[in-house]
Figure (tube, each protein chain N blue to C red):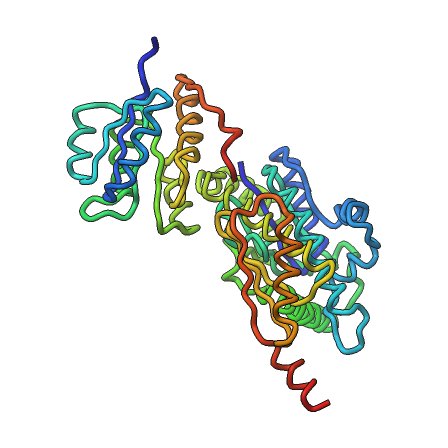
Amino acid sequence: MSKPLEILLLDDEVIVGKRLKPALGKIGCAVEVFQDSALAIKRMQEKEFDIVVTDIYMDGVDGMQVLDLVRKKSPRTKIIMITGHAMISLAREAMEKGAFDFIAKPFKPDDLKAVIARAAKALGAPIQFDDKKVGG
Amino acid sequence: MSILILSSENKELEKEIGKKIAQKLSFATLNEQFFNKIAARHRLEIKKISEAMNITPSILKLMPAKTWHYYLSCVELEVLEQLLEDRCVCWGLAAHLYVMVISHVLKVRLIGGYGSVSQSGQFSMAPDKMEKHIAQQERNREKWSMAAFNRKEADPGLYDMVINLDQIQVDEVVDTLSMTMGYSRFTAMTYSKKKMADQLLGARVKNTLLKSLTDIHVHVQDGTVVVTTSSMKREKSKKIETIKEIAGRIEGIRYLEVRWNKDIITEAATIFR
């Protein structure tokens, strides 16, 4: 059996991690959930993740800073930005800084799964996910 | 990949630049030639589509407001369908006015450049006359874009870039825009693709409703469709029901809400009749 995709999920809303961790587990991902960006960054110093999913607006270190840090430390890691305050300038800034994708909240777990599947493919570790079911 | 939309009163240079960039990037082009397909799909007259894209309904009623809005909605719907495909350079269709919120669309306003066009013999006018002609043309476009989308087409705030063709050569513009299109910030992403899908759904709902109704405004967010309309109070229930019935048949709507406002003008006119 191939190695599961290692995902770090950072969002200060507890419900996001609670909802997404089991959903991503079902497509064979090993997910570590954090609400505190400082703790997430500490963990990222210890371990290289395949994918980082991060909220943007958080107390302390925000998602854009997390994006910068991950890009410097681990260029191969795919970073997916999620936010409830999406706007055109923020989306463009995230992509310019090297985000793999940008998703506006609220979204369905299947929406994220589809992006994770694309990221996995880009990493050379494709996973089984039928993204035809995903709307939009 | 991304989309480039050009807007200019200088149709000759707009077309030249658009074609050159599309060729350089191996992108598709989308422009007035697309009216043929729109006409065929919606069974409209090409001449009238062109008219609707250029004139504003007036009391002279060259084209009634109802027809005008319907024709514009057909153009909007078909253009958005095409823009879903990405890798496209678009001009002459006022598309920048309805993809304002799409981050993977680079919107560029080209101003000036009439000197080079007039030197090439395409504009045979004295400079002072040409200046007046351009000013009049710009006023007409402003009137049109305000009536159609409640936006002033020449407002720099609508664009990512404004390029003065009196100061920058065509080939430099082509190089600059081709390079800019390669920036990651203009890459399509889940957020912008969903916004585009929402815009398309909104355009479909508006187009379908405008076939038989008037005063229809549609806003879509994540599949939730809000239709705003107005009528006389006594027609309220009937209009809301009709909208729900017609729009309810359209695929892709997660939730439909109809908001109604009293048509004070018609109401007042009826009272004093």
